[in-house]
Image (cartoon, rainbow, N blue to C red):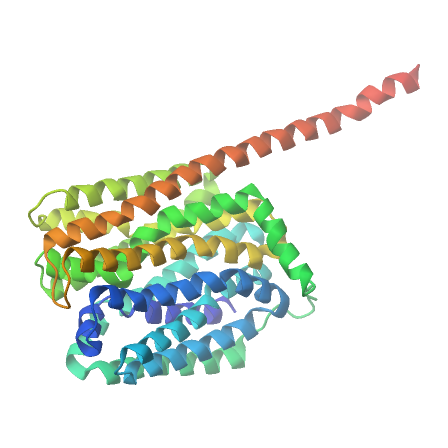
Length: 425
């Protein structure tokens, strides 16, 4: 069941990341500026982030199979539309469809994990899901770039859309919402659904999870979804092949991190907070080392940047563990949706801001210089600092709530002993 559901996530990540190496081709095909190009992934991620909470509530109510089926239909339709679109409006509409379908996948897979597996395996299986998703990201790097060169735009994206049809048939034939004999309790609709959202948001661990996802997930999304490839080719002067390889390095190191992070935080729960603060700060320092010099960076520094940015995807999922610890099982879909907004909301803002700054610094539809990229990519510092600061803030809130709860438990345990003295007298 998990493998079938996770295969949908592989397709979703492939479609989500397909602009990572196709950005320059898209700019030529649709004759758009940098800020217009950034609208493609920005609107895609905006739709994705905006639907996370409703999708989480719908997954709790209707089960993963129905939601995954709807997601596959929307993604496939969007990718087919993108394959044959020639105008800017059609291309934007296609990416919105992809974003809507993509929004229905990861939270649904987490629902499958929570239903089919014991809770102590959740962290490892969440990371394994992300690992499989990186296979889709990997396929959208070098292989997609080669396919675009060999077969052209329409054939490449049409064939990639066909993957969704095959996976849809498997989902319809195999996937089940829960094991035989298990009756799944469904939360009520209407106001009750939104009471789930309010109750989840009232838990400090949910907000800690969201900001951990924001802090860790922003930089890799921006780098892999759109601006990493143009920055490396136009700003740093690398060949398209070398730039694709660096994207692949970031993806592979994230896959390795998925194998390490899940077992690590299961065995050492206290490592979660240092990881979610330390790695984003280190990534920010490396970006500063790349952007401050006025000359192109040496290749070894760019490789190091890719190696440090890459694990952010795996670390962002630690936010799910922060949130899961403070919420009951019946609203885990809603909680997962709230947390999953974080990194994608941050990436949405960054993607558009970088394109806007590039056009302001160097207006025009052509390639941009390193100086323009130095200013534009520095925009990432704002969400990074905001995310790290709020992770620290809500970690203190969660710790304070834990101390308060422990104090109440101690009093409750001692109360019967104190009351027994008058009875004995």
